Image (cartoon, rainbow, N blue to C red; front, top):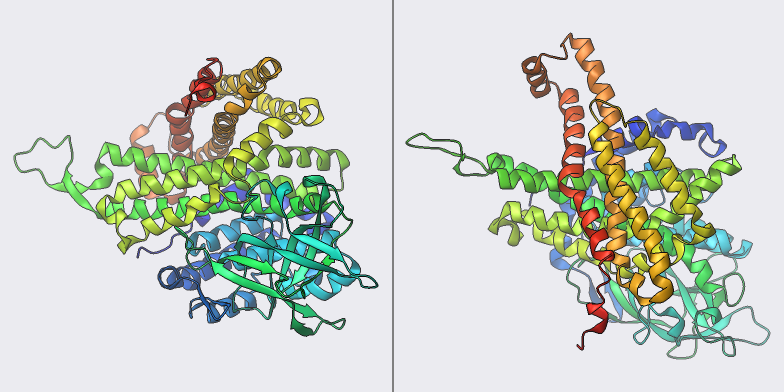
Length: 616
């Protein structure tokens, strides 16, 4: 297995140089934090990921999760690992410190979680689902709910899940058949039903598991309007918080999956013996609305799964390409040419550069969106808060779908760099590909994300979210229009941005005549949006990097016209090399990858309905 490498330098460049995340300390929520503390958190996260999570990954993948006598048993090495994770305070890094969380900004917490997910994806499902379920209880639960469950969930004493999917319903949650029947004189409901594909549905690491279950009260409306949400603990909880008797929750199976083998994805039966009790969250018939709080948080983390695993695959491929010698350099015309490291071969370099460009773009997209979340949650300026929420709403489906799709693409390219050694288990690349694929499927398939973007987010506030994004993008690109270094790149991004707008406004007209036609192109449109936003973010990074690079030239006394001296410094100075590579990465993305956006516009404008008309 190759060593796990976390690109902390790029993470800190995003947070501190581009986003200026220390500005968050001006908000009352984060006034006790500092850049020094954020840097310490990232350092400790990297240390834990490299030193403890990564070494346990391969064995956990091999052993997997097992169902023994109705109970899920996880790999033996998880017991101590879970204890260390909890003791390190990593269970709820961004959640309320009053109940055991660290209270970090979303952006800083997301960066730390990248290290954890990249080093050991399966392990992170337990904490990820638990704190998301806990946050829903914190926001929508009663004082009793918060008192009974929250601290135990945020500290990892108890686990948590969300139970949505049923065998006959899939993503159509309104078709669920699980029922919740009121009990006369009691504050609970009788829960009866079956759920499938429940991540971390059971495990032997926590004392209890708190399931959040979607169900319908008999007599409530059919479809999604009649769905309610219930707290259904695996073991009932007494009024004083102690554990009581089992709650008639049975694990009926563990899914045999392509990847994330050590994450127990369970089928669960509630109320087989008529003894399963659930407590209503909030109001009846608002369950799906409440659950979307948890699902939207999970969608960002799902996008992060693509970022983390894709970047881990890139780092592994980069190391391998530098070490693996095979074939002479194409320009070596000597009689006895020597083999060189495969990184010297142009096609391998293109694969690596494509991974690098996507990886840095996806990371920028996630951290930028998480930064918006910080202001949406805690800004005291209402205008700033509203704008941040608008951008968070617009970008969330792109983060989930584009990042998970491109994260998978990165693992594919990494395997190509490794060749046959990537296809076998020795270097762990095939596991990365297996583990990341699920990210495009769960928490709403990427097709659903595309429909959400085109059908809801683009229409919100009469198109106001998209218009705000357009205005911000226009201002940034306009500021570079005459720039000697970035003017031409800005024009390329501007043309792609105009194509995105042309497609969006074209859907309005075509949709009136043919309502199915825009939906046919929703997924390509989301990809198009992801490409343009990625190019914008990488170009922004390049401008910041160029400024840093110029300062180094000045400090070292290297003149602008001395290309040889500059190249020598780039090879010797880590900072100069990092900033120069940022400029090159933006250049590569804009000229080699971004042109796809304008090709997508042509397909959208083609009027082709063959996929709708073919007789399958």
